[in-house]
Image (tube, rainbow, N blue to C red; front, side, top):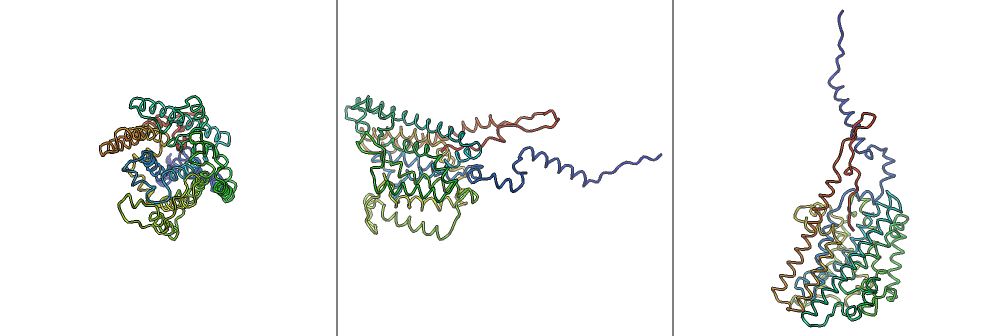
Length: 436
């Protein structure tokens, strides 16, 4: 009897291997194998952009933090080359605009995927952390200034109202009613972040309407400057009026949604880039400190300095003209991811901690300048130590977060009752972490 063996063609074996690969990929990445209509329904702007960090945001925010450190030290020679010398806006506008973008990226995704309760919980915890940093910086400043001025026997200036009335001053500081001059950015950020759920809801329902309402509030504040929060330190109001600066924060959140709908970058139009360049040129000629640079003035209009407290319109246009070419450039996105910019990117990713370090270094810089003068040696020491410390803290925090993320994301094999091996691990489901 002749036995007949079944011959399986090589192509059939290859087909079986392909099917096995497809089944495994469905287990590892089920979202990629959903029907197209279902994917389009679940893919929203905030979640789309949150799938991968944009190094431009972190690098630009890192640069802004370094500039804020320099600008917080009156008499610092590097202050002649920070952003406010080249236009109407400065590093504060950069920080707030990027805060709006990163808030939409980080918390908008949570609101969409996990609901309003989970998103609100994340916002509350972040606001509590910002508040603790603000109070810690305030108390540290009071102790350092008190000890320094007592030792060197000269009167305090920066926090003199609080030191002259410590009980009421500290109490008002805890309620954010006493905000010293160089510690006024975190309170603004706290208020803006607390209002993010309303910003998110408005932008999700109608971006145009949300921006219109935000612009109307900004306009009302500029018409009635007394619409501001009180500041016991000067008997007037907050230097950064949150009712005005919320407009820039909302624009940043809208930018994040617009970029998400266009592959992570703002849609680029050549005419818009040229228009931005023209406005930046005008802002530079009008704002440059020609006398400090020992150059003849080239101001075309010689206009007064635009109001920063109420966020004057020319300042908003300046930061938008600067941000649009940068955030619409894919080439800059690739460049920002280079190894050379790693320290700046780390500073931007861990902005709260790096900002706190910068504030403490700036405080000692102010005191050293007042005690020993603004000589060359003091200038070099303060700037080198401060800038290096900020970058080192950012890199250390980044290395620690990667080490913790690597441990949390180790995948494990699990055999289920069906006998099917599946890959489990937080690395597959853990969302991208942003620290706005």
